[in-house]
Image (cartoon, rainbow, N blue to C red; front, side, top):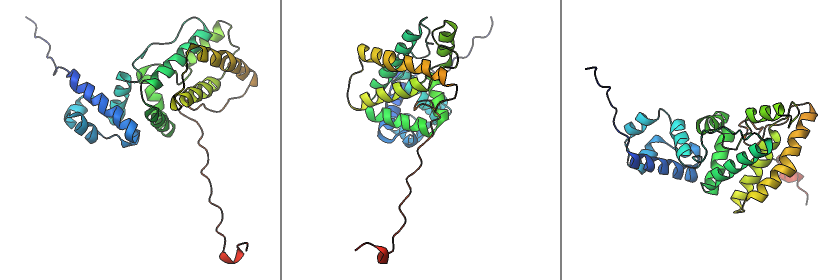
Amino acid sequence: MPPQPRRGRPRDAQLEQRIVAAVLTLLGEKGYDGISIEEVARRSGASKASLYRRWSSKRDMVLAALRAGPAQDGAGEAVDTGSLREDLLELCRRLDRTMRRTDARTAMLLLEAGLEDPELCAAIETAVGPTGARLPRAVLEAAETRGELPPGADPFVFEEAVGSALLLRRTNGLAADASYLEALVDAIVLPGLRASAALGRPLPAGIFSGTPTPAPLPTAPPHQHPSEETP
């Protein structure tokens, strides 16, 4: 009889739920930089060894928590409805669901982490599938093939307008229902995508692109000597 394959230790579903809850709570309290293996272990009642058996790094642990939490709806599924408009609406719905599965502060802190760490932003999209934060290149290419977009359309319009609008509505407690998303796509995104192709030049990176250009820090006014002060 051939030897039976060795089985690893069975997963503890309840423990993993506590770990996910601890990671998401810390994300909302302290942001990505405030999460540590030690604190997650303490809050979840897990040992550090059990965490490292599951994930080799903090980033992998956070990605797993996002996959099991805010981004679980539609995670891993490519967007391909056969229509550019419907693809855009599906991406908008995904991003809105992702944002609303967590509190506004967590959404803001996660965005902040992605802006500071472009690799984290890219890893989230890779790990959980299209979340709606970015416009996949495959969606643009399919639309060009179907003749819905001219070649050269830039994802800036989608990533800047949709990401900013939905984040603003989320943080202010405003709904983004079907009619709102349709207006966003029909009045802003679709015309903007067509216009971007006609510009013939690259556009700035959108807020959720992972590579936006930060604003320069304000410079302090020159120190005025007391004798120079206006009486």
